[in-house]
Image (cartoon, rainbow, N blue to C red; front, side, top):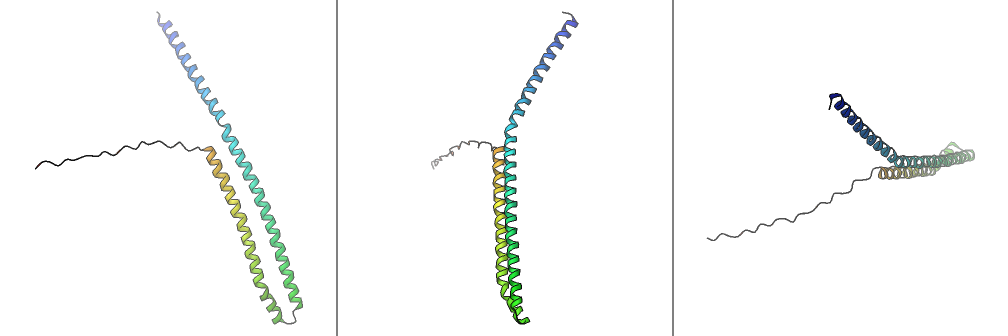
Length: 160
């Protein structure tokens, strides 16, 4: 066999191996691209859930804010009426002092409402995040360990 024939044969073999390697690499890449569909679906669903949560959170905050503003307006109107009915500065001052506990209670109620909205939204957001994480990152199965029986050494007393 001539040298050129050997080179031709060797180069044909190298081309064949390179083509086989490239085919396997492309097939592996296609498999990985197909595998990306589920994470994309999971992340898209999580995004939609977070978007829905954000809209509900905003709506709840707006509702609370409307309630707060209405309370402030009603409280202010009541205080102005009390001032209008007062016949002296001392009576006006006393009526304003009497209104303080109701104002404080309204403020506490508003703060509790806000905290409830924040707490509930945070809990839901955490649930979405942890659920998404659990779907994307499956924990590896626990390794089974075999417990070995403890060796017992029996000692005998030496004869004296």
